Figure 1 (tube, rainbow, N blue to C red):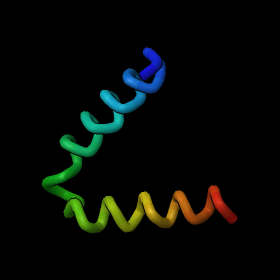
Figure 2 (cartoon, rainbow, N blue to C red):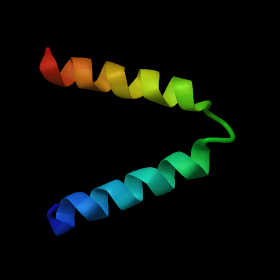
Figure 3 (cartoon, helix red, strand yellow):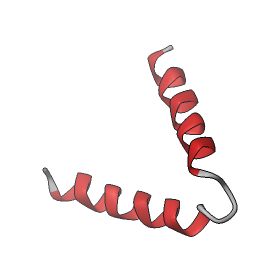
Figure 4 (cartoon, rainbow, N blue to C red):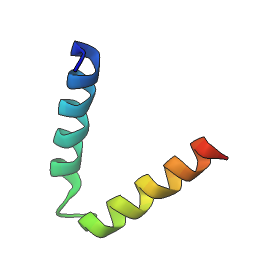
Length: 41
């Protein structure tokens, strides 16, 4: 895994942990699926 990808994932998971008390994990997953759909579309 490249350093940039690892840095991104570390920051991403830190962000998820920070907001998991406000946004349930299933809602985060839904948001990510919507984002992925937009990238594909």
